Image (cartoon, rainbow, N blue to C red; front, side):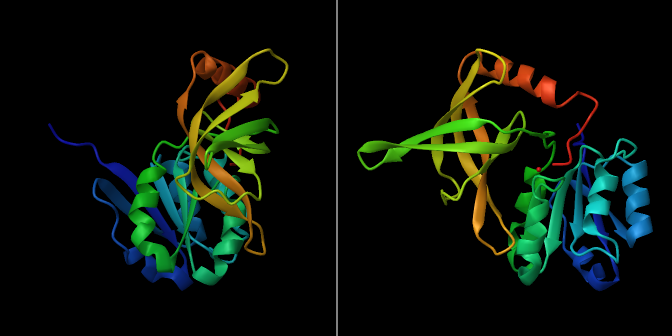
Length: 237
């Protein structure tokens, strides 16, 4: 039985065309688009699993490319979107995390590129949400409690706005109340990334749900149905 390959689009411009020579992960069929018109046309007419785009991209504002990918007329609307940029422009590119972009990798981290591409296959659409979340984690012999707020949420995780620099891989229990209901979502999660403000300081953490308590899955699904219609994608992660 043959294995179905996942599809990857690598979008580059004149300044970054040689970045497209980086090898794709095993199990991906790769296509290349050079320049704005060719890249936008590609995402409009084919459903890719992952798009890797270089930043900055051509002479157009980068948010216009994100809008093209996530628009209702895009065949690749649900694709994972990975940005490859230079180390000095990474902080600038990171502002697009949670606004359509799922991962940002700099050229000096290119060894992590395959992992980033694999991790964004079948990403879940996210919706903007302002929910108070209670985190609990071990701190020595005691439990540390942190209260923070969500920036966005999906079926697989949340972006939390916090300056608490919890290390990537840190696990904890969490709980939040579903608005306009008596339901509570509780479970366990881990930190998978940091988001950064313009100056390079951590201003948020991306968390992935590891497990949800009984009935929490249905409560979360019901809430997402209110803020994220089935036929719509928020301009994310």
